[in-house]
Amino acid sequence: MNFKTVAFERSFGISSQLTESTLPEVAFAGRSNVGKSSLLNKLFNRKGLAKVSSTPGKTATINFFSTDDARFVDLPGYGYARVSKTEHERWAELIEGYFNQERNFALVCSLIDIRHPASALDENMVRFLQDARLPHLIVLTKGDKLSQQKCGQQRSALRKQLSIGDDIPMVITSSLKGSGIDDLRREIARFVEDGPRNL
Image (cartoon, rainbow, N blue to C red; front, top):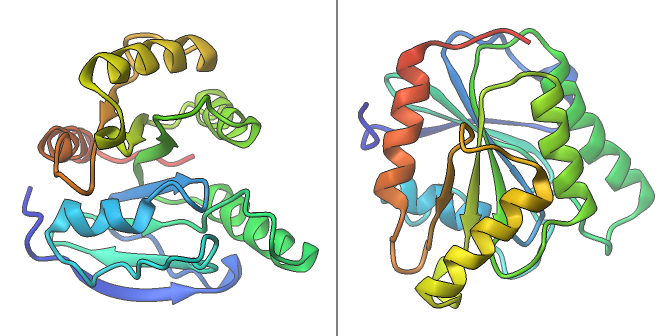
């Protein structure tokens, strides 16, 4: 799978605007401060592809990026408190609306900050992916902030907290140092090659 041909496609503010799903889709979901945009930029080695902001909760749209093989879907970050109730509802509608459509779901990457226990919202997202039987993996971000030993301990603790078996991949990454990015690329390619499925 070629990660060098990526291009920004479109942004959508409400789920009814979403265009037809014509390629396998790899979606990224996580809290608003989990480092989703930085991870996407590192994944494609393109610094300005996904906009990185010092203000959490800046991604208020669903952003689509395309390669020759798949579409990459940047979902709005959830859990940021400093926005209005109306904005929270719109973000929720975007995320739920995306998953409620008939789309070619190849993989959902659920991002969690390795430094902390999973939040209730993280737990809800993982439970939803499990219940919906969507192909998914857990991406643990900010691995450079902890020692290798502590990363291993946190991964084990998060597997237990989220009730995840060994069949669900869990990749420790660092957007700053690039560690784990090649592992993540390999997992994404494997899921895309296995073929998408409709929810």
